[in-house]
Length: 262
Image (cartoon, rainbow, N blue to C red):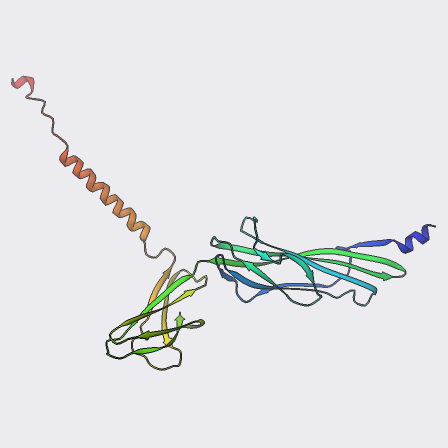
C-alpha cells in the first residue's frame, strides 16, 4: 500500500539541491531616466536543464519593483509588475522613474515551478532568484543657444547639439532667423555627467557652414558657482552695515560733569 502511494506522490526538490541551470538577466538601453518619465527594461529567464525530462511542465514567472537606496519600494513604478515568462524569451517592462532625483534599483524576482516524471515518480522543483539593475532618476539639463544674423537675409536649417565633443542624435532642432533677427534652439540633456566644467555647441545637420554656429559654451555640474558662499558673504555684509547704522544712530547719553568738578 505504501509503495502505491509513493508512486503517485509529488516529490518536492529544493532548488538549491537540484542541478538546474538558470540564466536571469535585466537589460536597458539607458541607465538614466528623467524624473517622472518612463524607460524600457528587458528581462530574460532561461531555465533549460530539465528539458530532457518526461512529462515536463514548466512555469516561469516574475515579480518586479523599484526601490530606493534605503530599500523602500516605490509605488506604481513597474508595468506589468508581475506576470509569466516564456523560456529564453525577452519581456519588456515599463519603468517610471520617481519624481525625486536619486539612485534607484529595478529588482526582479524570477520564479520557476517545474514538474516532471522520473522513475515512475512525479517530481517538483521550485525556486527563485533575485536580479537587480541600478539606474538614476535625474532632472534634465537644459542647454540653449541663440542664433542671430546681422545680414538682411533669412537663415534657416537644422542643427545637432554636441556635448563634450559627442554628437547627440536626439538633439536635432530646426531654426529660422529673419534678417537682423534671432532664433533659439534648446536641448534637454538627460544624463548623469561628472561634476565640473562641460562644453557644448551646435553644428549644422547637413554639414554646411552657417555663421555663428561655431561658438562654444560651457556649463557646470555641481557647486562650482559658489552661490551659497556668495550669499553668506552678502548676508554678513548686510548685517555689518545694519550694525554700523545702529551704532551711528544710537543716542549719546549725557551723565553731566563728574562730582569732583562741580
